[in-house]
Image 1 (tube, rainbow, N blue to C red):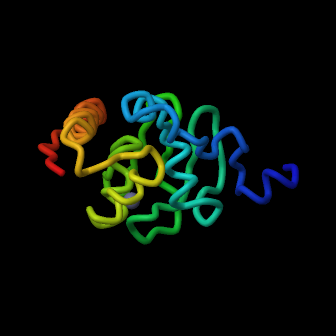
Image 2: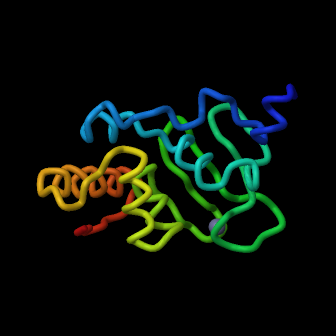
Amino acid sequence: MNLQGILFGGWSKDEMMPNLLHLGLDRAIESLRIEYVALDLFGNRLVINKKGTRYKSLCPFHKEKTPSFNIELKYNRYRCYGCHRTGGPLFLPFDYFDKISALSYFQSKIGLDINNEEHKNIFEQALEKEARRAGFNVNFRL
Ligand SMILES: [Zn+2]
């Protein structure tokens, strides 16, 4: 492993969050990848190794000794086989933080403006779509 690899716990620099603010909300949401958000939230604190298109790590949501938390690049989602939490890049911050912190996270990362009705609709719909893809239903209102 090179120095970059050691610094980022096996993550490559390409997997770090690019600046998405200039894209506009729609495209910023489309460009959001689970690896960006996971690396942003957990960093090298948790991720221990990469196998093919997935990272395996100790779960940030429950205590365990054997890693069962997967970050699946191919499906753009996270999934824990221990506590069964799953979702995509939009849902992860809501799973990890409280709602206010998650919203301010997206404000700073993708320019979400919760006082803007159009932004709210775009974001709510994207979150619901992502949840359905991950296999669960959310009826999410900001
Ligand atoms: Zn877990």
